[in-house]
Amino acid sequence: MKNGDKPSISAALAAATCTLLGTTAAQPVNAQEEPGWDFNTSLLYYGEADDRIQDLSFKTLSTRTFVDDRYLALGLTVDALTGATPNGALPQSFAQTFTKPSGRNTFTTPPGELPIDDSFRDTRVAISADWQQPIGRLFAMNVGVSGSKEFDYLHLGLNAKLSRDFNNRNTTVSAGVAFASDELDPVGGTPDPLTPMRVVRDDDDGEGGRSTEDKEVLDIVFGFTQVLSRNFLVQVNYSYSESTGYLNDPYKVVSVVDGVTGDAVPVVHPPGVEGSSHLNLYEHRPDSRTKHSLYTQGKYYMGGKVLDASYRYMTDDWEIDSHTLDLHLRLPIGDTKYLEPHLRFYTQTAADFYRISLVDGAPLPEYASADYRLADFDAITAGLKFGWKTGGGNDMSLRLEYYRQSGNISSSDLIGNQNDRDVYPDMDAIILQYSYHFGL
Amino acid sequence: MRNGILISLLLCFAGMAGCSSMGVEPWERDVLAKEEMQLTTDPLEAATDDHIYFSKEASSGGRGFGGGGCGCN
Image (tube, rainbow over all chains, first blue to last red; front, top):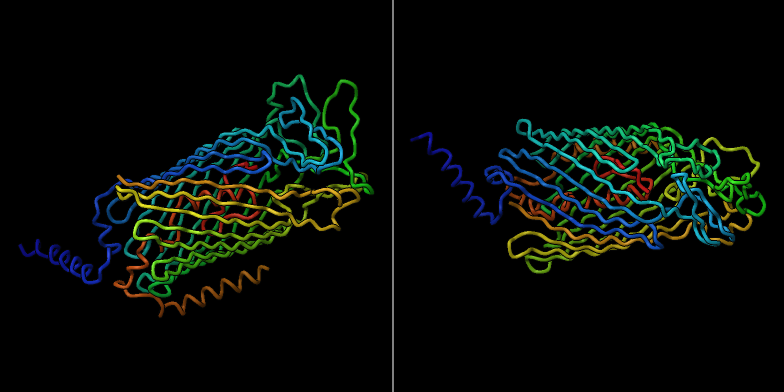
């Protein structure tokens, strides 16, 4: 009977210690819990103003915890995307016609408006699976796979991470690597960079001689987490990311303009040929990009309130530098509810090949893109989340956020009449997300 | 710029050496064990935000891997 006594004594001691400390104690007790499933689900609406992108997204993350802290996480996301996205061309004081990506017909943008391509409609399905388990007493490893499919895009990825605890588990050091192999299959085929927008091909089957392009992404992340005090925890991550292959956006163009007026240059098509009314060239980006980022996050507990602050600095070899400051403050309301205001500030410099327009007759640069996401801009997010516990002990939350992007276009980059037009209108979006977290 | 990152990394590792005297005893982890004190409190919200900002800005990742896997517009 002596052998049988040992666990009961240690269990009694553990229970007594927890009672004394008044805690719902951590790891050892969790390890004894029955294995079970835990479900995070959410429904998201993301909507941009001016009939731009709208996304209705369902996400679920199911985790099953096994004994000894091993767990499996399975993720599923389904996005239904509609709306319109800027095609890169500049607004003009006259109407402009563009060929749709399919090459089957055209659309016309009224005078003074930013050209947006409204043929955008897609469904994206993404899945992921991650397995985590301890190795020995101080190490933990995580391996995962991911995949996603859109009409014109396929992503497959693998990742692995190893971490080790030091200093009585007050310090954790980790290293991770992820590799993605993506395939693009642009609607209407892959356009040749810096060539004029294609004309309508009425003999086309709509597939436009589709051809696939590849892109590979390697990510390496080194992480360091430190408990500073009973109420204060910090994390620092360094990330290296290398993308190679086809990095263009096959649907984006750059306006070619008159060097004096800044107006788009008209195109005359032969009789019977329909196409873009003005000269627009397909964009061209380098076929590699290397990014470095440093991310730091702190969590500070202040008598029930929790401040979560993070800052990220990113720099890359496209000459884009960015700063991101993200602040969440969780304010408890009684024992079962909380309010969480959120503020996020973002700023980035432009890619060195970002061009508002190209001048007619001037030598073509090697690379050029008018994609608004590669411009110099600032963005702000302000939001509020309300969370509560249901009668059954599950968690629900609702958050509403507002996102605004404002471009910083230097007047020295504008030519003639471009100064009179809003070449980078602000982009406004709202994010509405409902989440439900429950266990079985 | 790369020197800056190298210096930051060196500072981190130097900091690590100093961290051996920081932290708490195992019985002082009551606050750190709370759900709201985890580095990622809501994994779906974090994934949602990473995906939105990846699609709309030229930066991604930091908290974890760079994300991606979409031909986002």
